[in-house]
Image 1 (cartoon, rainbow, N blue to C red):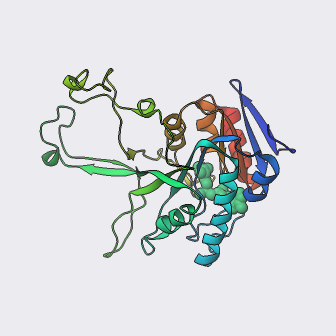
Image 2: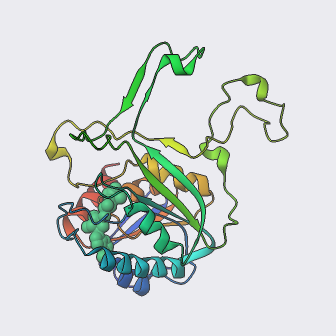
Length: 281
Ligand SMILES: C[S@@+](CC[C@H](N)C(=O)[O-])C[C@H]1O[C@@H](n2cnc3c(N)ncnc32)[C@H](O)[C@@H]1O
């Protein structure tokens, strides 16, 4: 199914993770057949001056959006008609439109079927919750980068835009469902046959705690749990793609979910980290 010579193929539990050290637009064109990918989970550079190993993250906004337009077109070609494209994008304090500008570009090519909030950190006061037996006091959970400013709040969330070709893709919502808080709901609704309900579109996914900077080989990753939830929500995938593979968070999630993976990155060091991560898993 995949054409051309990859940088490396890792075999794990009956699945393969295929990595190409290549620009993703050229790579998708060269190696992936039309409609061959079931799920895309990715996070592009946000154009906010992140210091990547190879990529320079500071294009003029117009050029950046033009480039992502081409990425969107390339993804549309390789995505199956009933496929899902999950696009994670965030903002920066002084530029709160990035994510929505990127989403507007993709609107030309896809239907926006769902918008999820990736919540990295949240504070919940006992007084707001009321009488929940599992919450006994005020809680604040998750990691975020503190913003020292009297204008901007700490940025504790990003977006996951779920694009599809026609907006009609059926999802396996209960695959990432949660138990009912009130068990009397089970059996009350036609759909409530087991103790599991749709979790909704606010996903609390904390970053793993990192002890030192040296254990962080990439400046802008998402936690493995994020692509894992996307892959499970879509359900039944055979091939998952991440055009901006980085250190392989989507690759690891795909393999863990029993699905083969293909990914591109222009940075050899990141791909080496991704490969080591999979080989060590
Ligand atoms: C936001 S990071 C993705 C990180 C990834 N989600 C992870 O958790 O490891 C974006 C990645 O895109 C890569 N990149 C930038 N331009 C690219 C291009 N034209 N083709 C493929 N990858 C590219 C960068 O090297 C960087 O690793």
